[in-house]
Image 1 (cartoon, rainbow, N blue to C red):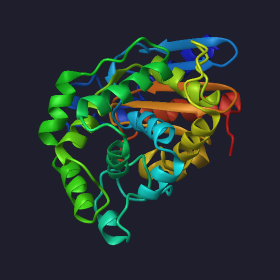
Image 2: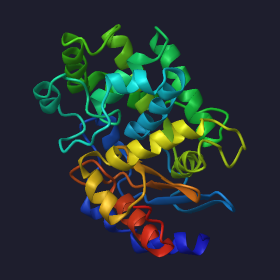
Image 3: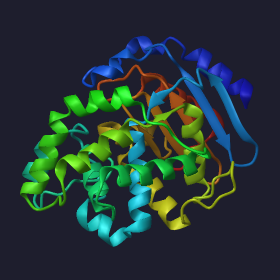
Length: 305
């Protein structure tokens, strides 16, 4: 496995030139565009890494699978999916257009920005710090680590420039689909997106989902099998922004991307995969991550649909 990962990284080492780092959050523009990392957490044989596997970046939208898993655990499926839908969206992840046009004006799924904000609002804590602590604690357990740190510079940068997310939140509140203190909920959202990670962490998170909620590194049953399966399913249909359908056809495994450059994937019963590549395509997906995921799927015959 190690030799395969090394060869895949080498094959796609220069593909970053086809993308650009995110700049709409100013601090993300400081990312190293040519970083390319790959990790696989095999449920039977452990963790394998290659390239810039230890390069730190922020989870951004990958964190949404953690907050979704938390909400499903503490609130239940009925509560979550009465507030957000389960359907993919062909619009950008921060679009307000479809939210405004389609009654009953609830987010189409929990993995777009509006959906993730609603999911956080459902958690039974009243303070931003409490919501964030619950999300970060679960992220650490899924990654098999004592804790997961927040990148303060990215958090501040997000908080200072997130007018679009504020617009989404205030619109949701205006139609009765978001309850609570808007700035407090958004603060927890900015903090969760700023959780720092590596592609090795994402591989273990993916493996925890692939193993029906059992972390293969620590042995802890972090999530119920039902919650893990629901999260994997939403990843499969909605995890790659408005490129989810294309990814399903070309790669064929549940995955979630983030504009920090990470992708976490879960191959049920087999492995978790984590990739890092801050240079993004026009949809916000890592160009190196997409290429490496496709290659691994082809070589290892990972496709599940």
